[in-house]
Image (cartoon, rainbow, N blue to C red; front, side):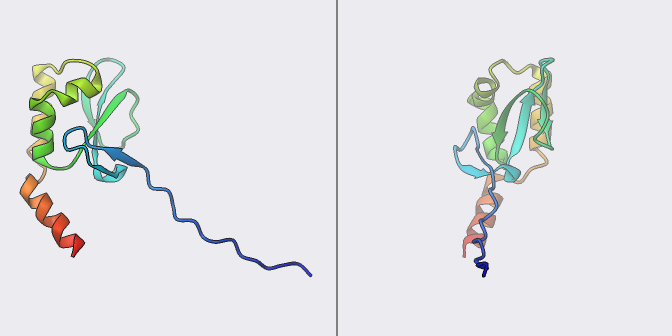
Length: 111
């Protein structure tokens, strides 16, 4: 007789990354990847798969501002940001939620 022992179901692995501004580890899909392409251009990478040096930021304006002002993004991408790069990233950040709204959302989810 063959045994019909079932294997336990393993939870799916969810990759985590750390925000360079607030230093919180979160699932990769909750963060925004910024990439320095091999050509040296800085871009937002919505798919998370573009080639180049990457860094992750939360979807909060406060993290984006900290990343730019404190030069954490420059350090993580291993190179300076041009004025054009900085303006493009700040424009993208203006479409994100403010830090207070994100904190309120997180508190309501934890209840």
